[in-house]
Every structure is written in structure tokens, then in C-alpha cells.
Length: 144
Image (cartoon, rainbow, N blue to C red; front, side, top):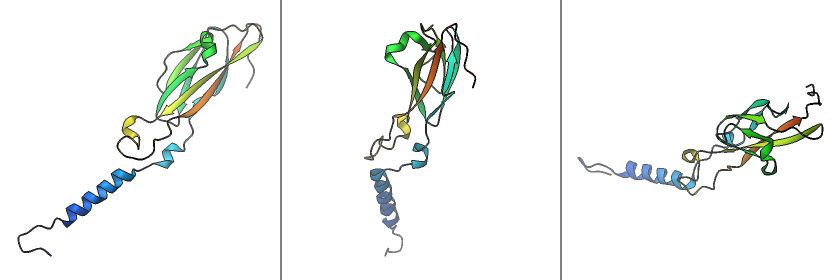
């Protein structure tokens, strides 16, 4: 009970305790983390000198990578971002050869639950793969 003219600190104290409790436990948005990461198109066929635009979706920030033992098969226009262009530099000795392009989605640090709380880190390793089939000049493009 307060006396006339005095202010009660109870609402302030309860609000502070609630805010501290939320900060310590963390809040998670499971709906957004359950979305699979995808690459469009997920597969394509190219000849040497041809290009394809690859677009990632279902994530937040994207990092692109190529198989380490096949870096001379082609190049990416960028290694970060939603969209990249892959250009084939490879003329396979056999009829065709496959190159795997991987995209990994991560959360920006501002949106990570563990950035300011003691919550476990958000899974930053959601990946998807695209399969680039390199065709020799004598091989026809497969119909889809």
C-alpha cells in the first residue's frame, strides 16, 4: 500500500524481472528455421562457355562454394548473396561430368538468438546443392 503522494515501484520491478527473464531464456522462431534452403535450378546442363543463374531461397544470408577439386571447371560471379551466375570453363573428356555447387544459409548476427542471450546457437549450416552437368561438344543437351 502506498501513502498519498508516494509512487509504487512494484510495476517497474515486475516489468524489469519479466524483461530479464526473457533475455536469459531467449526467444526462438522455429517456423523460420524449419524452412529448407533451395537452389533454383537444382540441376542443369552446360557446355564450355555457357552460364546459368543460380538463386537461393528459404534462408537468410547465403554463402556459395564449389567442390575444391574442381575449381578449374567453372567460376561463380560472387560467393555471397541470393543470386550468382555460374560459368562453365570445362570441356569434359568423356560425354559428361557433374560439378556440385553448394549454398549455405546463415542468420545475420543481429537475428541470432545466441547473440545477446544464453540460448543455444541457431543452426547456421542449412545447405542445398545444385548439380551442373558439363557436356562435351559431341554430347546433346538432355531433354527435361
